[in-house]
Length: 291
Ligand SMILES: [Zn+2]
Image (cartoon, rainbow, N blue to C red; front, side):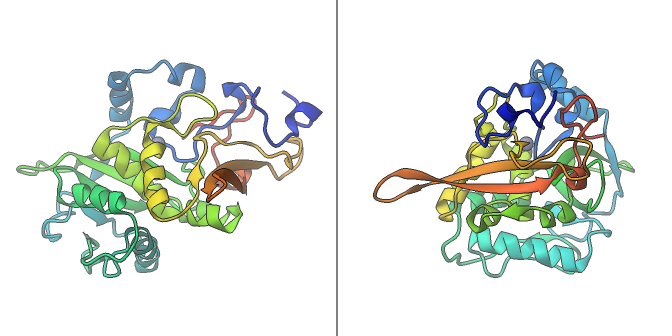
């Protein structure tokens, strides 16, 4: 398809077929498949597909974390941990939320403002029955923003929890440009919460254009509590500023919107990034894949 054709240079193009947009930008293992097949996949098949991508984790990873089920892998640098904690502090209103010296996520106390629903989600993960391991996937071509995959302990661990690995590509978020309110509503903290919502609530992403999907609907409630615009769609599309694939840059866009009082009119905010830098493009298919 020729993306330089005039009909595809408009900002809103409701006629765009699903095969012509990219999946994402928060991706999981189930999104590995081309979209026409993916939309037919059931939850059961989805789990089976995820099982094929099991990641092996050292058995002692949670040994010293003392009842926090969210822990950083060694490769997640202290600076990145602090960056992520800072974003979570802002979202939750917990000024004392942190990763401790063992890399375990410690929730805060006495929140000021922030999202109550985000605090509830983090609390359920940290104190729940599933282990979540955070991994730095910065600049990995096969990870666009974030993804969650099932993990498996390397050794037999008595009473071990089911485990998931959340990969975070911090560099991808640094490549996003756009309106300031939308940038605040789309960062590594929000990306992590999206993946955790999949883990805890078994929520699904959108299958149709123009809707945020079950998972992002949950995250949008948190954005609303923070006074931030909400993600209007799950899929992102070619930006009208994009150029033909013969050029190096390939811009895509994602829209957010926020109702303005008292008119109740919705104000739109846009994010734009170069999909060639962030990843997720398969040449010729114009769909998102993970690997
Ligand atoms: Zn998702």
